Length: 229
Length: 229
DNA sequence: AAACTCACTTGATAAATGTCAACCGGATAC
DNA sequence: GTATCCGGTTGACATTTATCAAGTGAGTTT
Image (cartoon, rainbow over all chains, first blue to last red):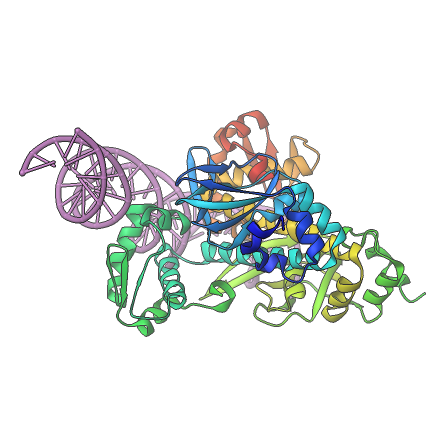
């Protein structure tokens, strides 16, 4: 069975419920590539020849303009990235680099568009995925425009704590410098934002965050499902 | 013919190429509503019962958080808005208010989702629309994170000039206070940003912008198709 | 015509954020 | 074991942006 090695990605939301034929068609020319850490696998502005799916490791999506760089998102297994460019046959708007050693499936864009035309179930999944990405991006813009950097950090911590199981202590998922860039501030500013959140019960020791009093932090952060999921 | 009064919207991209049956199904329970200026027609957080299409006038999409408000986008005829919420049956992430007297078609979400399931052509159009909105939102985030307010204004002016026919003078499409909010700054800051752009050949008189030397402004603004289309 | 409204502008000041340089301390290299 | 590297932190300072208050001027009301 030619698709055996792709069994891991059979279960991602994007491929849920699609016919076996469709899946085979998608995988027939797909291949898995192993990347070392810190390798740029996509450069913004290039045309989108492949849909990418992260199997293991993690991928940072980032963008550049005039000597500035900013982290836009991080992709964790198992999910695809940059599907909008694939569907529209337009250039990537973001670059991508591995954060760590990563295994990535590369599905030719032509095949994605082909199956998209033929398999209504797949088309539906693409829509759901796109709508979800779009909404996430809107939330991101609201976060940036309506909140200060301290508030963005506070809400980020609450979200991360929740995902980690809502315990009092949890690890940051990536380097502080990347977190700073993701949250739209400098590393120095992030450092000071952490200090400022001490009065709201937050203490950091390296990668570990201690949240003494989530209620107090919530009072400051004012999270809402219309921005923070 | 029951859909006669909806002939104006038959031609929008979203409905291009869909069967007559599908169009009738979409319009069977749809209705046109006239709104005076400055009326809130959607409130963020509410569930999405209708897909909206602006026929005449214009609609401002905005968002609130903790006593702050920001303009996210403006919708001009003829286009739909907030399709992602409709498709995902999730609450609106943005509020909408008429900027001026406006005629708006309201299509029940249930019908949209119905036709979406049955008409592959419509589903395809929805995907294209969503992918386009998503990419616009990514560009917006890049604009906010990578540029200063002066740079955002400069690029906005170049974009507007281009759309207006690339002449030396062109009108702003809306109030400066809304423009300021859209660009993510205060009205005072916008005012000063305009003054600062004088040295790059920009002069404003009320709603009219004079751009003496686009080349000089481009040099400062460094527009790129990866942010500014 | 006078009064009023309201968006816009300007000035003074404050707050938020960025920049540059120095320093710290754990991890790695030699 | 010492030196080096590098991410993170801290301090001093600059820049950007917001806030508050006052003033301007076109358009509208009375």
